[in-house]
Each structure stands twice: as C-alpha cells, then as structure tokens.
Image 1 (cartoon, rainbow, N blue to C red):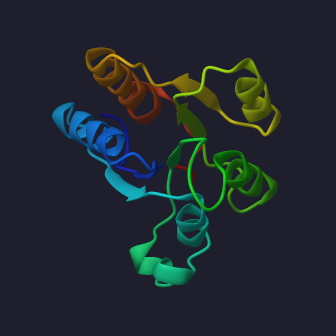
Image 2 (image 1 turned 135 degrees about the vertical axis):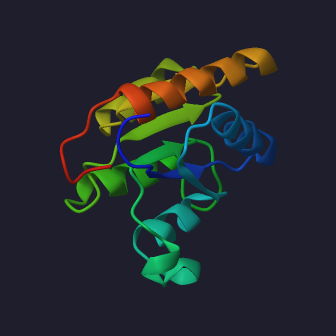
Amino acid sequence: MQGEPINILLVEDDPAHAEIVRRNFEKSRIANRLIHVSDGQAALDYLYCSGNFSDPEQAPRPGLILLDLRIPKVDGLEVLKTIKRDDALSAIPVVILTTSAAESDLARAYECHANSYLVKPVDFGHFVELMEVLGYYWLVWNQHPKGEA
C-alpha cells in the first residue's frame, strides 16, 4: 500500500452493511482506520468536532467519506452539500455508497459534487467484491496532493 494509512468515515445506518465494509477492508489488509457513524447528524458532529465528537483527538479528519443517501436525522444529500460547501472539508473525497439506483439520486449526488456513486449490490458476494475494488482504488491506487488524505 502506498502512503500513510488514512481515516475513513463510514456513514451507514445498516449495521450489516457497515460490518461488510469493515470486514472486507480488514481482509484485504487495507490498513486504515474505519470510523462508523449511523446517521447524518453524527457524521456532521464528527466532521465539525461537536456533540459526541467534541474532542478532536477522537475525531481525526477523514481522508475518505463513504456516505449512504438514505440515513436518519440528516439526509445523505444534505450531508454531502454541507461537506462540499465548506472550504475546510470540500477536498475530502465523498463516495456515495447506497442501495438507490434511481437516476434522480445519481444526478443530484453529482450535482452536489460527489466524487463517486456506487450502488450496493443485493448479492452478498458482489457487495464484498465491490468493497475490495473500492478499497484498492481509493486507498491504494488513487493519488492525492501532499497534505491531503
């Protein structure tokens, strides 16, 4: 693996999907710290070091955000808009990882400056394969400017 390990913020309300991501990253030996939150408000709290994440030591800046669209409290698109409007956060790559293959969701995500849009496969084996490819692409092969990610 190239470079230093990064922090990955996973915003996912389905515990089974979160576990698939975590296990697959471990299995693939993708040496990064995965931080899991289950709703949009917790994601914003994490990113802005507020609420349960008020200690910056407990909430290091992520180098990648995996964001579900259909999450409680604050919708995933609102979280995405907030991230991309903030100069301090906008350079963090945000990968939408969702069950929605709706063209309207896809278009809105890209309009809000998502870096990638992935539809979670229904088949478990395909979901595991997607996580493996995702991990290697964003965390091994993708290049970042110095000081980012």
